[in-house]
Image (cartoon, rainbow, N blue to C red; front, side, top):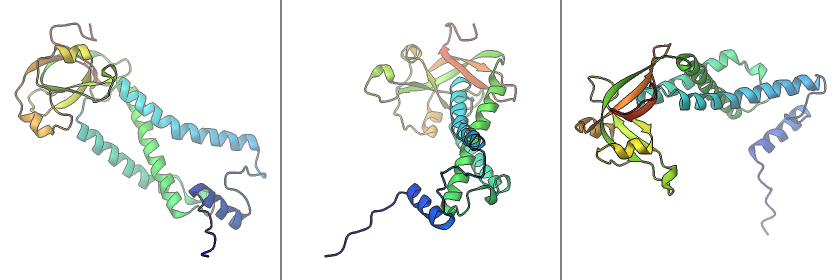
Length: 234
């Protein structure tokens, strides 16, 4: 009565259809005028860049986590993505992209490139800053602790709110082992406790921080231990 509705095409299928109608070929097909091995090598390099950057960045954050506030990490990351997005219009010309690429796909590609490049720079910079750097220990006040909410207690992560910077009331949540978390006689706080509330809390215990003296001037956290016990620097 109303006629059969045409099936909706996915974004990739719609893009391929537009390419075939405009240029007579599938955008994901190999160009017969160029050597196939070279096209496969370029595709492999692009995939390695796009996936390798985030993997390297995440691995570096796990091994050499910078001892800075979460707010500083967010602001720096967003600023890097914004600057690299703008730089992509100079580094990657539209002529280098597939012909007829829709504007939305063009901008999404540039945003993805900026995000992956940010992670890549974070990974490389973190390794240069932290690998083989000397370690030092110092005591810092702890004000509270909390755990994540996984059903399995063995999979939960423990965090301690620590005044990691001497002379400052500001706190940062640092992950530590279950043994350290259980050994600290500090209040248990809610997961979404604001930093302003933590800053107003009194010192309740002392933890020992093992900190890497970064080559680029950015300290990174090796471990959080109980004061008076063994540390990662021993």
